[in-house]
Amino acid sequence: MNITGIITTLNEERNITECVQSLLRVCDEVIVTDSYSKDRTVEVARAAGAKVYLHEYIGDGLQKNLALPYAKNNWVISIDADERLSDELVEMLQRTDLEHTQYDGFAVRRRNYIGQRWVKCCRWYPDYLVRVFRKDRLQFAQLKQHAYVPTHNTKRLDADLIHYRYHNYDELFAKPERNYSTRGAKILFLNGKKSGPLSPFLHGFTAFFVNYFLRGGLFGGLDGYVLSKAIAHNSFLKYAKLREYWKDPSVRDREDWTSVW
Image (cartoon, rainbow, N blue to C red; front, side):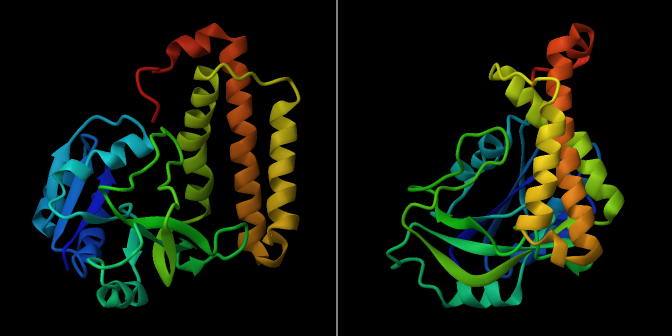
């Protein structure tokens, strides 16, 4: 098919081969934009059949859009290194006439996993995202965190994109603590937002209540409970770190503010 697969990477040596191979089931070109990985991501990606371009990380949506000018095809499919095309998604894309479609993009359901366990609660399924789109009409929003492709003139496909989101509970808690809460706190700080003394507790409690009781975590067994706690933990930390940045200049001065990773 005349479609280009694009992937952004940083130290994805263990994931990149299967990711590239997954895209090659429907793509005649795969492009990787790597943020100067310190492992063998670049070497492995090239060996798997991808073209690789290096660029320092500039934020989620900004980084994903970097690959678009390099794509030889007008239609692209963007996935992360820990995502795979399901068989039904491959079949549906192969049956879709992209050249003559009236739509500018297609949204797919992201099927999120912890380990090998498909988790459906807490809005983890169906998690619709526009991942297949015309680069001349759509692109990722220019955001540094949680970027997305707008849904204007797009259609939902009845097919899944598999996302191996976390390998285990340790990673479920460690990843938000290492990346998401810090990034979120920095973005809020740079936008002049402040956090009161009760804000971390209120945001943490609200996040747990909403995800466990209103978004089905209660019915997700142990995975639902642990996921709700992890989301609450991340929310608590984000606002705790934001307050720390304002209250303690020594902490703020030790942070790297040249990029928000």
